[in-house]
Structures are given as structure tokens and as C-alpha cells.
Length: 210
Ligand SMILES: [Zn+2]
Ligand SMILES: [Zn+2]
Image 1 (cartoon, helix red, strand yellow):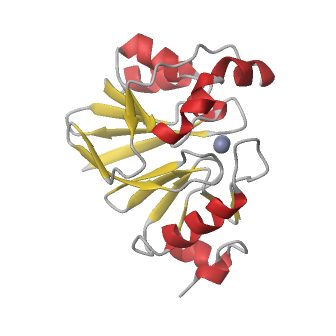
Image 2: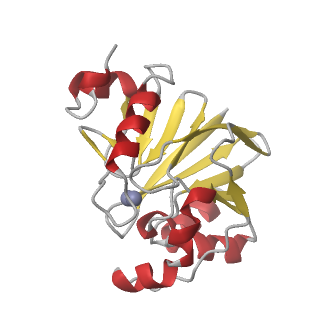
């Protein structure tokens, strides 16, 4: 069993999630800008960070990744299809006026990989490109960390330089039909929701309700 905490980042109100289990091992999902917020939570709860997991390479989701990596000496996991965004990290950071060093991705996840295990955390990986080429969701115990794939009432943008609207359509359809409908969605921005609720109320997803 694990618990998780959502911390809202200083950049674009991105959701940083910290998962932790009874051993106090902690996984940081999408460490956006605001390392201090992360570090305070880790210290106040005597947690032991073991990895960073990123749903995709957009700067609002990884602005603190390098800081987490260097402070805690931990690996960073991310889908390999986003390597070009990482190669252009400095340029993108400059665009957002974010002073954040480029993270070194130690564990590239292949798009066909379906599972990763980090200590006691076993995640099901789901490759859902479109918003960026390497978008990936991570499911654990009925909770899905879906990054910028789906938001409450909306979906991730597909007008960005590396986006692909057609891939997004395919990803959304297969995503909502690949998990239990009661699965909780911990989204990259905004409030959490569930697949069932979005199939009922989200104008971008209602057409996929079966
Ligand atoms: Zn994004
Ligand atoms: Zn985002």
C-alpha cells in the first residue's frame, strides 16, 4: 500500500506527486518547478526518495528533476520517445525563463514496456503519445498518473511543436478502454477525476464511452 501527496508547482500550476509506502520509500512523479516544496515534504515526513518518474519531457513537469537527481542521487525514468525534447531542454528552459539544469535521464523507458518495478512500487506503463511524442501514463493500484493526456473536463494541448493530434485521438480512445472505468486519474494540472466521470462529462471523451 502507498500514500501520495499532490504539490502544486510554481510553474503553470503543474501537479507534482510524491508517492510513499510504509518503508518510507518515495517516488517523485513529475517534479515541476519548486524543489523546496518537494524537499520540505520529503524531510517533514522522513521519506527516502528512490526515483523520479516523468510522464513526459515538458519543462513544467521536470523543472526540478535535475535538482532531485543531484540532491538525492536517484535515477530518472522517462519514455525514450521524448529524447529530442530533452536534447533541446536548455532552449525550452530559456523560452519559459526557467533556470533549471538539464536532467540526465538514467532510465529510458521503451514505448513497448508495460511494467516497471522500483523497490515495492510496481507500475503498469501505458504509452499515450500525442501531447508530446513520449507521453506515458503510470498506473498503480487503480490510480493512474496520466500527465497531460486528460484533465478534468479537458485534454492536453496538441498545438505544441512536437504534438500530434492524430496520435492524441488514438491514445485517448485506447487509454479510456484499457483501464477499469473506476480508475482514479491524477492529472498533470487541475483536480483529480476518474475515467468514468470523464467519459460522462468530458466533451473530448464522451464519444469513446462504450
Ligand atoms: Zn505537457
Ligand atoms: Zn503540463
